[in-house]
Amino acid sequence: QAGVQKVRAWGPGLETGQVGKSADFVVEAIGTEVGTLGFSIEGPSQAKIECDDKGDGSCDVRYWPTEPGEYAVHVICDDEDIRDSPFIAHILPAPPDCFPDKVKAFGPGLEPTGCIVDKPAEFTIDARAAGKGDLKLYAQDADGCPIDIKVIPNGDGTFRCSYVPTKPIKHTIIISWGGVNVPKSPFRVNVGEG
Image 1 (tube, rainbow, N blue to C red):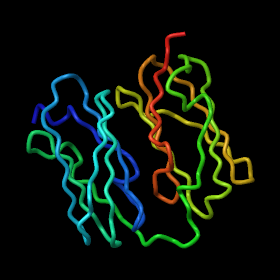
Image 2 (cartoon, rainbow, N blue to C red; image 1 turned 135 degrees about the horizontal axis):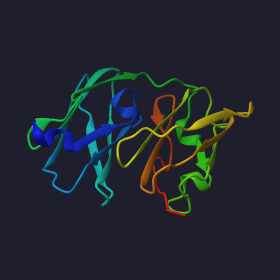
Image 3 (cartoon, rainbow, N blue to C red; image 1 turned 45 degrees about the horizontal axis):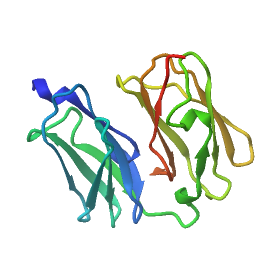
């Protein structure tokens, strides 16, 4: 079991998603010695899986459910499920009035560089064209600690967001709308010492 904690997986696609849209999550390897990663998905449909290695010890994983229902998502390291695997994701029929691909997220707090320890990092989410959906953010630093992001709705379909990084390490932020990852997310922010 010693090697099992070296890998963690998190993100919307391990909880929920919509038929016909990719269900996305991040897998992060902690430390240097990580074995062979594998993924398998059991559910109502044969879901195609893609893995995009980011070269920084993390990869973006997405799968494509074509039917609603419960999907068991296995994240495997050296032939063993990692902690909390399999993850049970509840995939829902895609509502006609939810357009996660129309969400825009931008601002200094999402840029790869420029954020500094103890200084507020701010960004905007614009969901004005995205129809009906719940906004949810998933955010962790490279140590696996959650990042507290304040989200203030402006009342017009846009949101003002901010967090204060306390460590000069990589921060990863995933933004989802209606349970689906939005364009350009996950955002990886390398926080500087200042």
